[in-house]
Amino acid sequence: MFASFTLSLALAGALHAQPSQAQTPQTKPPQTRPAVAKPPAVKPIATQPPPAQPPPAVPPFKPDFEIPRPDGGLRPATPPVLTEGYVIGPQDNLSIIVSDEAELTGKYRVDTDGTISMPYLSRVLLAGLSLADAQVKIATLLRTGQFIRNPQVRIEVDQFKARSVIVSGEVRTPGKLTLPGTTISLLEALALAGSPTVNASNEVIVIHPPKPGEQAPEPITINRRELELGRAGRDVTLQDGDIVNVPVAKRFYISGFVKNPGSYVLDTGTTVSQAIILAGGLSERGTDRRIKVSREVSGRTVDISVDLDDKLKPNDEIKIRSRFF
Image (cartoon, rainbow, N blue to C red; front, side):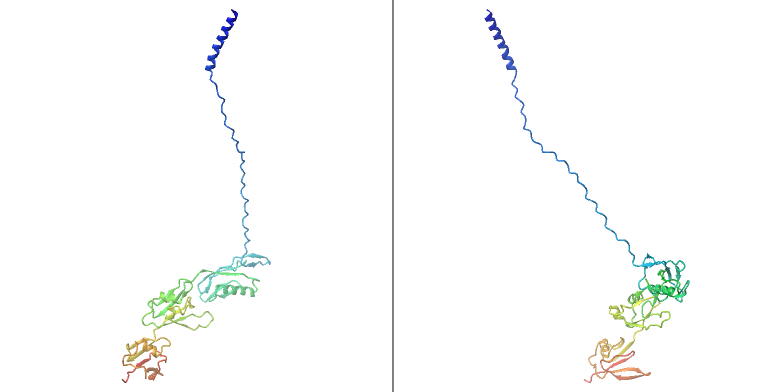
């Protein structure tokens, strides 16, 4: 009986144990991914700015020249600003600077006689001099007069006098021309005066007024056609007071057996042959032999025989004869 009871308990335990196994699912162990090795952390490299370049060395200022001090030392000075080619004239207002000499430094007006009144030196003639020459002259006077041992002088023009030239003769608008600057070219002056008239000569005469204390220079004669073509007169510069004259043309006459007899402008050096060409050449019956020219000699008119290469004179009359056949 005891054995059967024991068996019953064992069976009951077995039955009780089976459903619990069925109800409890088998759990799989979690799958783990293989660990991936991380690269070692790279520390950022601190970038350092490039070393600053030192600024380029600036050489110390060195003046073009130095003015000695009275005690023998040197100090820099500003070089004078000169107007190249300018010539001092009456009624100019000048600024004269004498280093370390306040009594001499000041404004000076050039009088009508071309002089200025300056302390120590009284009257100094400056008209007709360039600014550079005037500086040398004043410095020399101060040194030779033993007023200043080593004077340093600078001259500048504060105010220019109104400057003009005169264009006269056979131009459209003769008269006084105000210069746009201190000088003007001959061709520019003729252009401002208008074109030449029909009676104008091919020669232009330029007269420069004499400088104080000097003799009058010789007039300059320039061929107008050569001037207009740029072959002559390039070196002629007009300044205040110059006179330009375009005279009436000198003429010659040609008559007889030419195509266009009449009066023509006589250029310097015109020959008999060139005169015939100007008159259109010989007519059908004209000949270039036995040519006569009527010319005034010693107050009376005479006929003289000429060759084709002979040069004409003012008021000559060429007479072209007819052929015999």
